[in-house]
Length: 289
Image 1 (cartoon, rainbow, N blue to C red):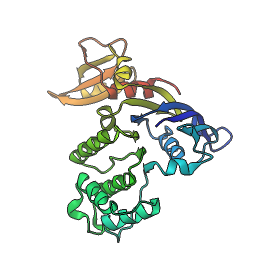
Image 2: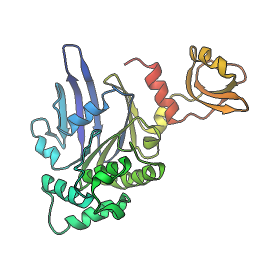
Image 3: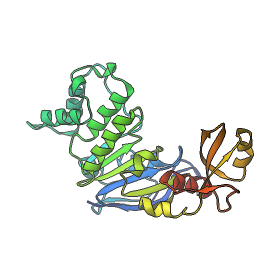
Image 4: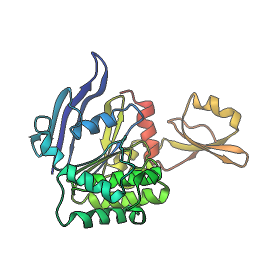
């Protein structure tokens, strides 16, 4: 299984690009897409899912052009879009049975497959309850289940952990890790912690362009020696931010403990081990796309 994206662009107007010259090659494993709102993540995912067509470039799955032959992708695809909707009067079992029929999935193994997915997503107790009574997190888990119904070879999740509590997010990450042995999984999120523990490859996007791609430790290594922590009074933070990229702040003994990125740390700073969130902010805040 190989997905080859070659110089793909999506143009909405003369000089208005949602995505520009994006190229990457994927095989089995998990790609984590990171980027701020408007980075082009959803645009890219919709083109891979054949929901929309690129203005330029090639999208090839096993050397098959999926723009010209979208059904080749759709037969092997599981997709959870960011704006996933449900039928509130149907139960989870009924809804997933309906989606399975839409995907051409059936036979004696369908019902056990649905029940297995609902159990894996902690929805067994509500399997026969109308989805309209579900919480937002429960509806999102139904969305995850429908993406996996047809045992896809390409799985795309666009902001899949929205509405999930911490325990559910851990359950989701474990599910995705198991999938990655057999599939190409593309996971888009603005929550770095949802990606850094499971992604084999990270792609960081900004303004419709690919800034950097690589293994998580490779991306983190780029900011080695640039992450520091210092303590300061709250009223000094605004001025400090004008000259330094602040990653986070926390209260400590009446002051603020400030984690920041810099080549020239201020006095009394302590060097800290960088993580993916530090690297992500460095890429998106200091590099011009």
